[in-house]
Image 1 (cartoon, rainbow, N blue to C red):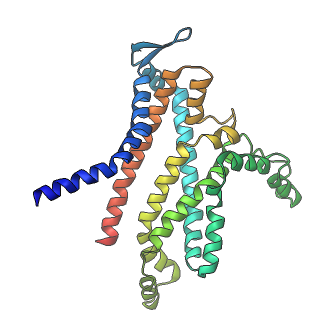
Image 2 (cartoon, rainbow, N blue to C red):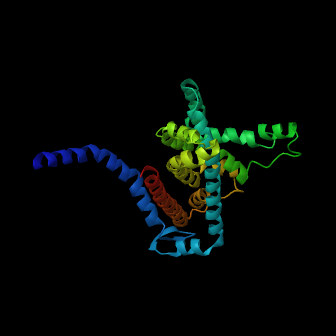
Image 3 (tube, rainbow, N blue to C red):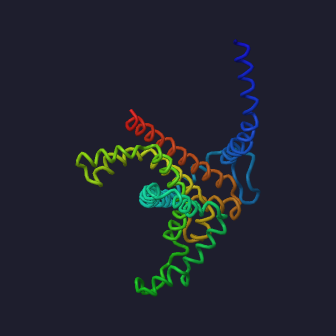
Length: 289
């Protein structure tokens, strides 16, 4: 019996070996090398040096420029997450009440942004957000604006485009939770005298919180680490952490400093994910206890 169990364990390890090797080679090793690079000294004439120092981290933690950079990135990610929650949750509830044929069609529309290249999608939005683009032209024609709005190379434009990109992740997360709910519970609350808003607030919403929090984690982390959209829509006027890392690596050629900023971004995202997972676990215990 023990021999059979040992043989089964070996088979499991052999089957998972390709995935483990790929995980180590494509994720763990590059991250470890980046972390090591962040401790290298840098000379403007000789580049990265074979000397290890904490000067890169000291520079980041003592320069207010980087505080502003991380704060701007966090506010951008929080704004996109909040809008995705406000739009995605009602959208998913409406979608769940549609007929199956309509559900399939609208799912394709919602998931459409994920089927298009990020560069093509962002360039398409740059045309829409331009001073003579469709959005400004429409606002001027119906009298909602006296002058073209500055949507390109602005934080507002970056948030709009990121929301369009991230909304499907919120819808998918809430949809998976919504499918596990029993609609008869809300109907029972209505039959006992609860109004529609009360039934939603006290019955449906608490059970949707795990899906909402899961979607919020995905949206926040992807928004904080997004590069193409802030670079193409925000340009040089809207600097976030990812574009700063790009500049350090390819413009300033200060690879250790760029690696330091990248490592700190990763640590921040991990802290957000771990903290949010704790909240999700507590909500699951409260809902399904």
